[in-house]
Image 1 (cartoon, one colour):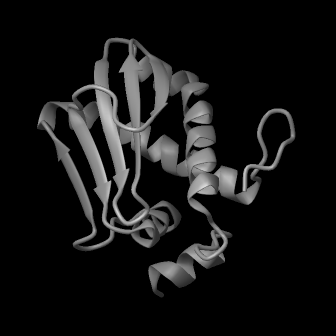
Image 2 (image 1 turned 30 degrees about the vertical axis):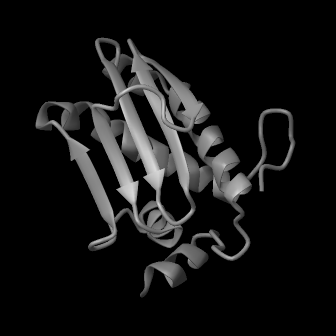
Length: 145
């Protein structure tokens, strides 16, 4: 099954997702990740800046991890120790839906020491984003998409 079909099966419609909608859903997913006690405990010692990029959407965001707190910033902020880069939004959404990185479309640039820290964050983010896509509302009941 292609990533497009798999993603649609999981409730993610590429054609219906605007750049603004994607940004709002991504930000909401990080809010949910930041509320997870296990993630905060896992990161309580870390000071780390991560950069996330979806090239064809010209979408960048930075997540600063500061002693268990996650701060989401639109755009690039500071120098990242870890960079996630997808060539296409379809590849990004396909990876979120399937849990498998798209061949030749995804790149993770990181010192190996940081992988132990960021892998659980990415997994929690992917799970939270799937949840947001299945129920795209914020805490006030406002639709995100």
